[in-house]
Length: 198
Image (tube, rainbow, N blue to C red; front, top):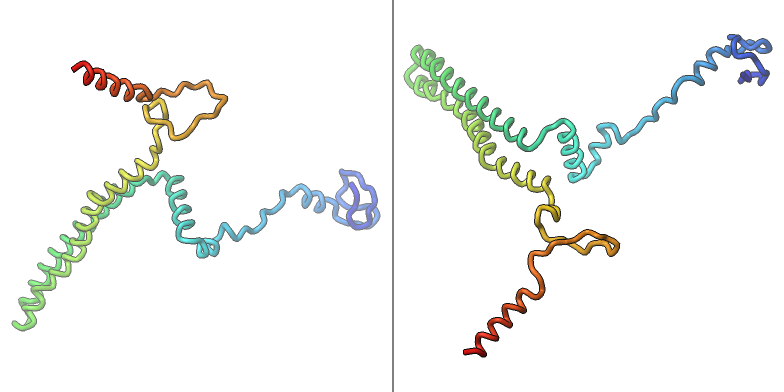
C-alpha cells in the first residue's frame, strides 16, 4: 500500500507508516467503506411541492398500487367510514338529547327551549356518514367499474376482437375475420338473379 502522505511503499499488515507515521489503518477503512449516497432532492418533500397535479396524481396512484390499495378497497373503506361516522352521529344525538333534558329541567323556561334542541347538532355527523355510505355504494361503485375496465385493456385476437392495425409483413400468424369481401357481393348477386327470374 502507498502512504497517502509521503507516497512511500508500505506493507499491508502495518497500521502506521514507517516513514511519516500516518495512520494507514484509517486509510484502509476509509477506502473499504462504500461510497455514501449522494443527496437527492427528488426524494424529498420539497420535490413533491413542485410536482404538477397530474404528476402528483400518478405518483399517488403508483404508491397506492404498491401498497395494494385498489379502488375496490377504497370503496370498502369509504363505506366502513360512513357506517362508523353515522353510528357516532347517532350516539352524539342520543347523548346530547339526554344531557340537555337534564340541564333543561333545572334551567329557566326560555333557556330550556333552546337546550332541548341542541341534540340536533348530533345529526351533522350522522348526515356526513350517510353521505359517505351513499357515495361508497353508488358513485365509488361506478369508479371501480371504470378502473377495472381501464385495467383490462383491449381484448386480444384470441378473445375475438378485430385487429386494431396491420400485422408485420413477416408474420405467419393467421388473423381470423368475421366476414369476407364476397359475402355482401354474393347476396347482391342472389337478389339480382331472383329479380330476373321473376
